[in-house]
Length: 170
Image (cartoon, rainbow, N blue to C red):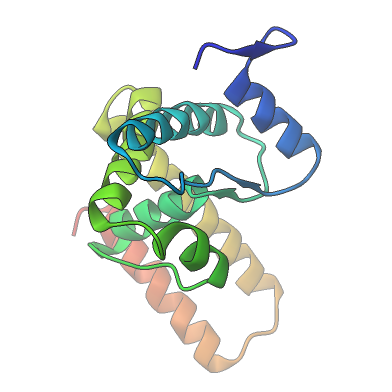
C-alpha cells in the first residue's frame, strides 16, 4: 500500500487514528471473494499487521489481527492446533462468509507480517514467550495481592507450573 496521508503510510495513519481515538478497528473482508479481492485483502492485512505490531501501545482490538494473535499465543503456549472464536462479531463478519481457504490465506498474511517484523520465526516465538511471561508475572502479582478462593489459587499454581515447565523445555 503506497498511499500516504500527512506523510504517513495509510496503515500507520489508520492505526494511529484508531489508537488515539481509543476505538477498535475492524478490517473487514471483501464481500465478493474473487482471487483479486482475496489478494488485495491479504495485502491490506499484511500492511495493517505491520503497522499494528510496530505501534506497541495499542490497547484496543484490531479485527482480525488481534484475534489471530490471540490464537498464536494459545497455539504457542498450549500446542492447540485449532480454535474458533466464539464471539458474535468475529463469527458474523469474518467466519460466516469465508471459506477455509480464504481464512487460511488471510491468517498466513497476518503471521507472515509478524514474522517479517521480527526477522524470523524464532524471534517471533521469542516475542510470544516474553509477552506470555509478562502476562503470567502480572497474574502472579495479582494473585498475591488479591484474596482468591482455594480453587482459584490451585488453578493459578497449576498454570504457573506448566509455564515454568514450558520455559525450561519440558
